[in-house]
Length: 101
Image (cartoon, rainbow, N blue to C red; front, side, top):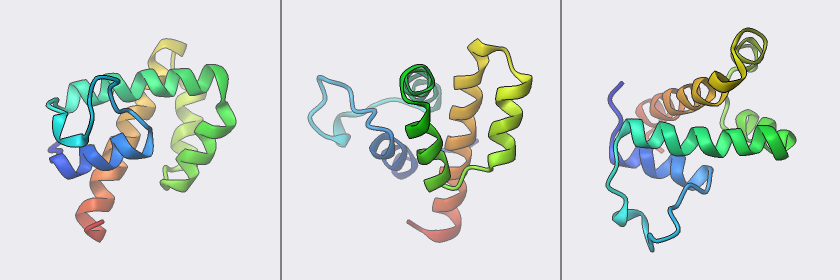
């Protein structure tokens, strides 16, 4: 999957993934794997402490509900955040490509 800086910025902003030491998005210098790791950690937190917020966010960014249900039903607990993160990244890239947001 090819992810550009704009896609990373959108995802970082939607999920408040800004690193504490960073003052602005230009300070980010990471790629897809780093984004997956940060997003997975945030998703794990939301699964553990605020599942409603996670589900609302997934709905708002138009993640396929059946795909999310399938992940929860058929994945090991430790893989759920990573698989949801990949769905989010893929959807964000698709929206940016199609709608130029």
